[in-house]
Image (tube, rainbow, N blue to C red; front, side, top):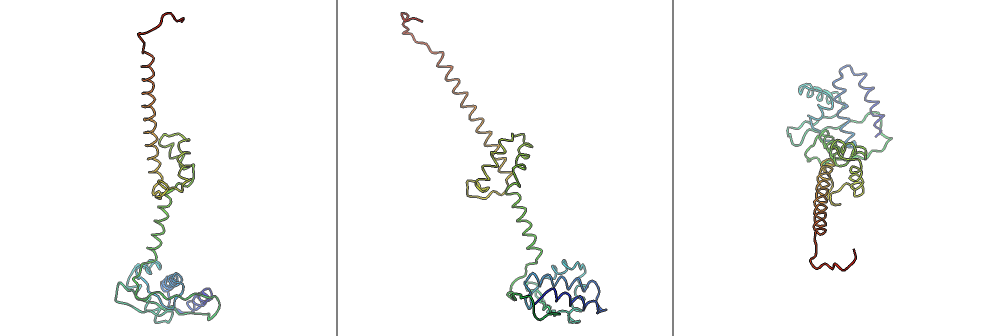
Length: 225
């Protein structure tokens, strides 16, 4: 089935049919998009809410009237369902072509529960947002973030190079969910290490000063200075 020839034939047929209005065309194109998304099966289930969203039809009565009229005008075959978990079915009639582009006709499981296409798209969008949080776009973004926290550029470079080298994983195993949170933990640990070094250095200095003050009672005064 060559979908370009199909659409050309459909538009030609629509232009000759005075019974149709823009709402019919919009609804048909919504069904065509779902048909395309499902890889052109002979028949497929659909979700009314999704179709209304794609076709920009806000009224249920308008939707029902138009889909029944498209069925009556033989633009498609509409199989209404009274089961909200199963959904209605559509057969998209093929116009203008019987050969051409090969299409793998895959008929989905007729009993499967429907998940609207826009929910799949929303899930993809959410995954993309999580990915953006998981790791920074580049080193400059990290440097700017560290500067906003009043940390030096060198520390930002250390952080970026470290996690970039291990694939942005904590302990080399767990994927980072939010790189900014990881950066703040890095700052806290760096501050702790800095404080520990300061305490250790102070203790060493005190110990050295104490040793310098020690004297011995058995001093040999016969030795030259």
